[in-house]
Length: 69
Image 1 (cartoon, rainbow, N blue to C red):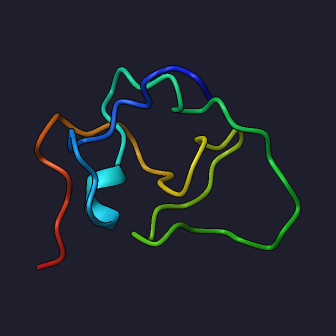
Image 2 (cartoon, rainbow, N blue to C red; image 1 turned 120 degrees about the vertical axis):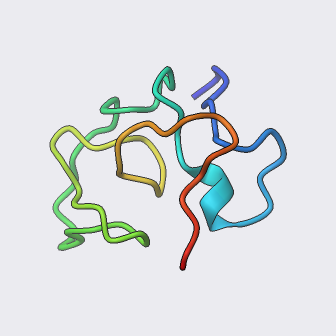
């Protein structure tokens, strides 16, 4: 991907910072692969087509990446 992936943080430093904003070109732009993975690190199911990258959830607002409670 050469476009801005639109992460929820301008300077990703951890897993919660690489969630995708609603306008991300990476949302549902991936290619499914048969690797047995059914959810991402956050527990989101891997859809078909998947997102590009590790985060597989819906877009979230800028600066509001979900955090563990």
